[in-house]
Image 1 (spheres, rainbow, N blue to C red):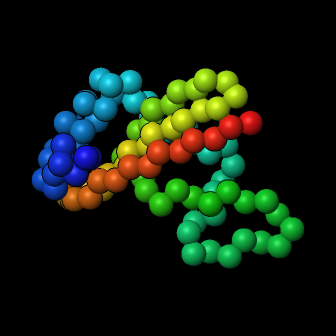
Image 2: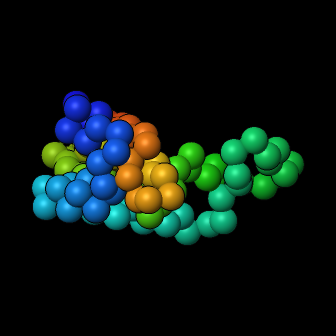
Amino acid sequence: MLQRKFPVGTDQGAVKATLLGQGFKPLTPPSEKCLPQGETAPVGRIVYPCLPYDLDKALEYEWSNFPCGDTIRVWWKTGANGAITEIGGYHGHGCL
């Protein structure tokens, strides 16, 4: 659905404006320094893996009905001209 709505070549401004208008919000940066993908975690230390996309090129929408919650996350990549080269999404659901 995302690729039909925002095909390759779509300006990223249009993606952001549409999603923000639907209630999507910027992602919160991790509170801890993340471990880049492909690096080995140090022994005896808790680490958080870095996201595989740029936080500035991702938005999410969250809703809940205690004790469960859902998140939809949309991310994209752009070329030098700011046009979308790739777009994807994720839906997560969890309960306490």
